[in-house]
Length: 347
Image 1 (spheres, rainbow, N blue to C red):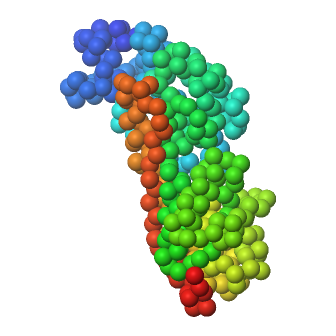
Image 2 (cartoon, rainbow, N blue to C red; image 1 turned 30 degrees about the vertical axis):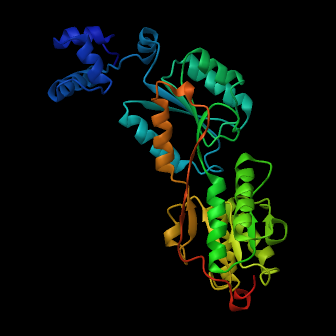
Image 3 (cartoon, rainbow, N blue to C red; image 1 turned 90 degrees about the vertical axis):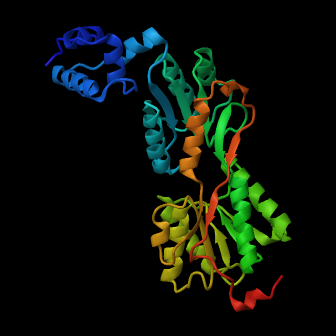
């Protein structure tokens, strides 16, 4: 049924309260008695009335929506980030508006331009490919809408909050070195991506600290074509079985690759971690339940999201010149141990 109430002013007159009171109550803002809020929201619901976001945006120049531009949810493993981002924004009386793109700069630019036209309060881009000269970014800047990037693929320019993949990878290598390993296989660290280059820099830094030779002690394996990361890991296990006498430590692109690798190695009788140590990335919820429990790098998603939202609230956001890097946490579990006895004395 169509509502007979067409504005907050009409609803306010019907209830005998001010328009200010109705507006704050319906938008979840503080300063209104709880009983009054309940009465206003109940009446609005009964009448089928909802305030116009467009009208509010035209009056104030902003809505209470935050545009969020997302790449492929599976490839980038974004479930935890999205959930945490939604919770954090709602705590600030803001509402997320999600736009999933097809991983091209054209669709990302178009999404940002739509957010600007909708007068979003702010915009967040995850794994953004854009820089400050991109049309979508310029449209937000022209409208005075803050734009923050979380883990951008293009690290040049703009305001960003990122996981410090370089430090994370370095610490993983140092952990293996302290256990007695002197060589490792790194899976999926592509120099063609920003994330991959950061991880490779971390391996080089770890080699310098531990006294390894990057060229001879690090084997870089590409991910094979496969339906998913679990299948890719399983396929890599077949390759590893042909070389398992030479390297006894593996650092995988993510936990899914690590799990696929672990399961197939175990199916062939390889004992983890007695014969090979294995480290994943993302510290997903299944890591503690693997057998053995999987050592993994935790990107500290909660802290990453909180920092991004905090930066959006800064009145001097444009004064920030450098990206903010958050140090991940290496969560050591049962999948890493000293190498086989035959390897322990080798330097």
